Length: 158
Length: 387
Image (cartoon, rainbow over all chains, first blue to last red):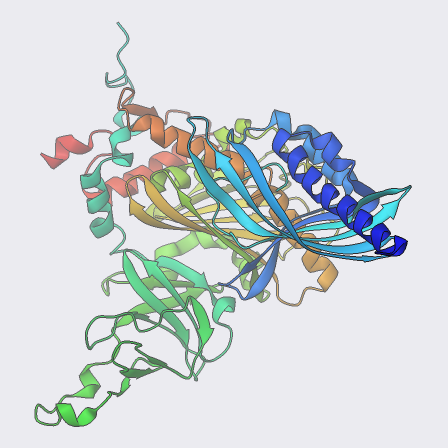
């Protein structure tokens, strides 16, 4: 293995860590730290394809500034009290210098206050990540949901 | 001694027996007394925009296929094969030149006529009359792009049934072609009427800290149980509180910037128009505590991509599944129904009288007067009249 190959592997590992860290921070509801994983000029989206209308639907689209405002307000809202647990598996990490395209399949498990767990959503993260100041951050973090009928709606990102 | 089952000391129009939301017998009466005898919204015409486009759904517990014919006419049929009762169309949406039942391959035209049977020689001895074995048609009419069906031929035409309440949306829905850009579903663990109530009464806006509260609106009460509330002037939603910029374009015809209009069509359709977007709620009652809800978001068909993106954003920031408003309503209504099943507090209070200001309960009282008339019981004492 050449030094260059090793460098690519290390970058891939760093990107996989970014994706896993995203999930961990959401599960802990460390939303401020979650936002720190985004570049200042980035975007977050949740989309789902609506079979009934034969088109993709955008359920959430915000830049970091909008996200920060929305997430700061979350404690003031009446919301789902269930705990969540992300299971994320990166399936594609294509690195090209200081940019990468990442696909990760994920599910979120939802555990209600009485301890009942069910699969909440399944989908794919489709991410563009960039290396800024020596660390990988999201330029675009897109949540592509397969699940369209949720057991509960959500005030926080998926 | 305080008792949760003591009849309130109020006029009987001003309270409900909560068992109308939980009792199986009441639910069965609703299906026959209401859902077989009113116009039921099934889809927007943009969902079947082209000849051959179809949508399948369930209305009043019956499987329906709505289809636009070659002649452009929108028709509906029971989605059940005349041969052995299998569903003829199994896709939720599509485009077809005709329909073929997957089971024994009987075929039907877009007009419902039976056009072919597999191995026809087997029917020669009995002289099967195909002209009498078309798909069973369902009465279908549209108003302002909204497609309704009705199972009862005695019911007045759709426009008359809906009446003057539709004046509130005649311009925004009826003067420019709209199309559905958002459709999501949810299985509500609550009685269907509680969702209608939630949209009808403005009092619960206290639940939503994010919603602007400048509301010089008036409750509108119309015949057949339809109601709503809106202003003839400004009625502001505080977009900034949601972290979004205000409406910058695309105000729908007949509306002012930041205006909101809310219509509740008896028994189960809600139309919310907020300046630049339209939300339509459709319910399919499945059981006393189980309701399928479909939410549609609509914009103007000729929108530029940028304007459509803004409409989508403004729709979803409140009314999408990740919005700031809809999730709170769902939590409230499901919790309400779960508590109601205990029957430890038997009555709901609908006693606010405020000269038709938005938090007046008169629209709820009017709704339950119509409900009682159709179901044949009093909402305040449903079992008294059933005995």
